[in-house]
Image 1 (spheres, rainbow, N blue to C red):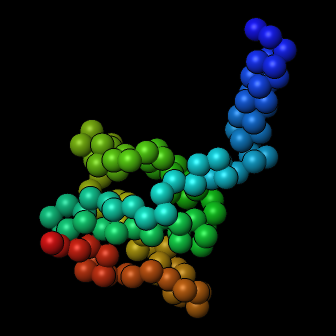
Image 2: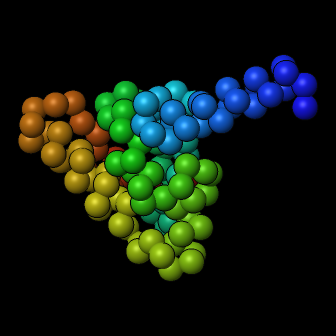
Length: 119
């Protein structure tokens, strides 16, 4: 390995260490898609404004402590039986929206039909 390759490797390792230690927020590395469409079961798909949620709450672990940051993670965990049906909606989405409403902050919908789109 030449000096340039060693320097690049060292920077990669340092960056990963800083992200892991929380010195650099992980979302600056990979903010994900601005808009995501989540599977919503028989109630219909859920358009999810991911970027807007990141701006309202920059702590990615609020959601991603329950499921990995990858497409299809929620559905995969449900199929494996490790994520109960409606847990994401009831424990994350609706609860957070209601808490924000109660605090007088802007909030997303709190009823099923406002998010789920049949079609």
